[in-house]
Image (cartoon, rainbow, N blue to C red):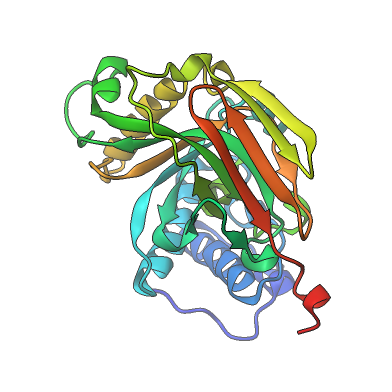
Length: 286
């Protein structure tokens, strides 16, 4: 257990150097406060270091545990940083992952309140629903393919609790891989019916094309991304389970959205997925 120290702002957290567990606790507190208040915070890399992978995932674990303690339920995982261009931008050579909760999912046709996700950016992905556990065995491509029940088009609404998306690898890992919300399409395909690495994606916002890409942009093959995740999850003692959803990573660049935007992605073989954003809170006059 841990306790949030009252009356402590970002500057207070960095006035005295922190190390080890104290740094992890302070970083988690900063992110949780930002999420609760709806006000983005300073990066946490000043607390845990820009490249300390174990510290970053320790912060994520604290953030996840807080959500679980408040009644949220884990429904799957998301993979981030699957694009080589984004990896180069952040100076990393690996993807990351976060946890999906039951309250993150929206149905096709829903309107997402604009402020439900801090600093929202949308990306189109291939999502998978598992039909079998991925806890034992080699967790290679063949095993992962066999464990996937079906694929479906998805829009992930990424969000950052870090101000102005001023993130590096440690920041996004700690911030639950910049997760926010997601919506799934209604067309389900088995892997006998669609080849994920060969799909083509076009995403529009307000009727204008804002992102394009292919399945191969996601670590060469979205199924390879799931295999990577399966090994990481098992190594951390929390393997993927049957019934869980996996968002496998972006097929093209993210796009920032504004209040009232309508976003649509067309993915060959998987159909269309779309979502609308509501007006800004202030615009509603509330």
